[in-house]
Length: 282
Image (cartoon, rainbow, N blue to C red; front, side, top):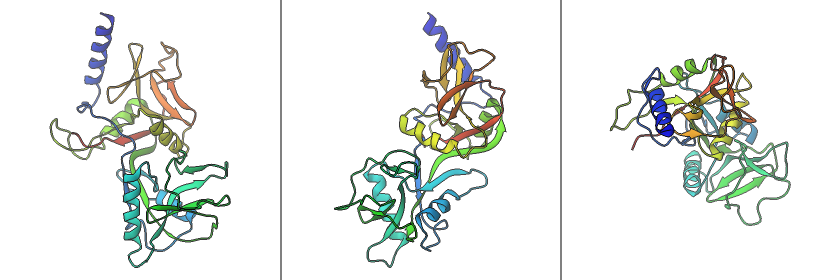
């Protein structure tokens, strides 16, 4: 009986939110679009300048997070390789910077610009060298580069994560994110929906945490809310990994994310927040 009662409360909570909840779909934080074109002028840049250029991509209405290209699998690798060819139509061996490097804090480990470790095996023969710092893609191989002054074309990416640098309560952040929707969500039709951020994997958490440092507050709101002793994501899934007692005091019923992880905070505090664009419905 207790579990049934709790589930009924959760359902009531979802249905009573300020803006109606869309049909539940898997929420992938790591959906991304690779980019060349208006953000890639065709002029070669150093790795550092290419990184800054990609991160400066800005859309006024929906300022998605952007960065140098990050690849998770061979499908991503193929997309980036094809865009590098597009960015260098006259080159015999098109070569582009990607978002893989050795951070200043650890010169022994290759990491992506979102701070996740590199686990792909596409290094060219005898690559990389111990003194290399940056990585370029040529064909289906990766090559290390140790000269910071080297200039190449580059491939950017735009993911579906939006960091809103406005201080709002949790409820205000929820309303803000859902008001971003491109068109009204209708059950059974394809479309997109914006919401306060939900994530469920270590990779997604690490990616979001790497962006928190760009916020103007130490912690940012995410789509977690406590109800009947359980933490509920706004996509309908539960989460038991929030640092808080079972019954938080002083209304600490809303979730935040910092570089240290998830925390429980009072919902009326004001801070920056994450929105994200849901994947297309299926």
